[in-house]
Amino acid sequence: MSSAPAAAIDYEQELRERLAEFRHDPLGAVRYGFPWGEAGTELARFKEPRIWQCEELDMLGAHLRNPATRFTTYRRALSSGHGPGKTSLLALLCWWNQSTYLDAMARVTANTGNQLDTTIQPEFDRWFRRAINAHWFQVNVTSIKVIDDRHESTWRLDFMPWSEKNPQGFAGKHNSGRRMFFGFEESSEISDEIFRVTNGALTDAGTEKIFFAISNPTRNQGAFYEAVFGNQRERWTQRVIDSRDIEGCDLAEIQGWLKECDGNEDADYFRVRARGLFPKGASGQFIDLETIRMAQQRRVRPMLDDPLVAGVDFAWGGADDNVIRFRKGNDARSIPPIKVKGEFTRQAAVMAGKIADVLAKLYNGEKVAQMFVDGSGVGGNAGRVVAQVRQLGFKNITEINFGHDAIDSVHYAYRRDEMWDKMKQWLAAGGAIDQDPGLAADLAKPLLVDEKLQRIKLESKESMLKRLKRSGIESTSPDDADALALTFAMPVAPAVRTRPSAPKRHSAWG
Image (cartoon, rainbow, N blue to C red; front, top):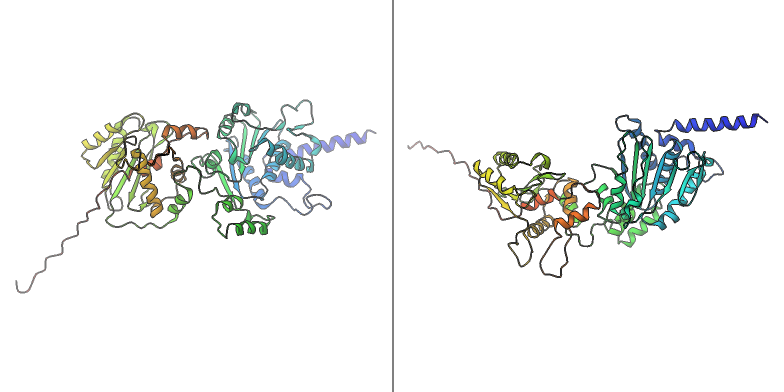
């Protein structure tokens, strides 16, 4: 009678030790922990997870195996069409998280509570019940807990609905010194504020912190959009998944979607459902994504006599950048922008010196014909900068105040609206910009205010700041786009090129 308990204890100890070996190897754990290819099981037809899922598991493992990155937050944003197995990946990640680390914690949420109850939790239930250590866990509707009274409150996964009215109800989950996992499914529709409060739980040092945001890209604004294509890209790593590239997806069904769109792969319906791309347009968006994308891809074709114009957007501290952008006719790509962190330019003399350097320099053999600077920046130093630059001998610099009345007051409310619309027309008519995701995100930020007026009016920067702050975006001002818009402040005369005089010819006759 004594041999059976001993065998059971040995088996459990061996299983614990074996799974612990995969603490920093999610792919190895998943390959070991499920009956891949075994006859009579649900996984009999599968040798392992899909290729892209294996890649994601291995990438996370590489992050954790590296001592230099192990305790930095792993933020991963995955935008995809329908059907590649996003929820299955999230379930496999959470099973690995809970199975290989004592007292690991996880929180999983989705766009709605109904999505959590009817789609996410049942998928997790299937994977946890298939696993080699299924007997370790109690799978409930709202949680998955280890079956151990000593650890049930500290070694668990919770399916957490969220509320925009009470975002702090989602906050506060830390697991200092151990491992904390956050999984957001259908992230495109999750409130920006929930992303923000989650970031607040990722501040513990010496802790393995993992944040996966996965979604069909239904909205081209908000925290998930910013993570994949916007100006939060540097904080995240991202992947866009076309369902047609994933083995096991129903290609005939996807082809049917394309037929519904008359063969147009760039139709919003097909972009979102199949290609994993955000829709091109949005309600109230002033410059749509398709216009921006075309400007990024077209060839540069400036005219020789196009003047070289520069625009300067001041930040004066904080997380925003001081940005100098250049444009020569349709070319705003060939000369890279100059960016200086606002914290380094609090003194007017510093920025004046940098601007003077720009005006003195040759760019492709040509000097800046005219520079327009933002005169409405925080701090009120723009006038001082302009005055100091002029004292250095440069007269081709003009201060522009975004908040002043438009020159064409019939069609525009303010100078900012006027410059942005001219920039929009230029982008659509042949303008070429670089691939900087920050510029692209800036161009797409402002919304058109509908006041039932005949004049174009964009939302104020203050309103935009409040709207974007819900995304947890530190640098909320569209610095890059404002700098480019300033190059349209006023007409600039064509560059005058002097031709070298022809050599004097001497005649044999004298």
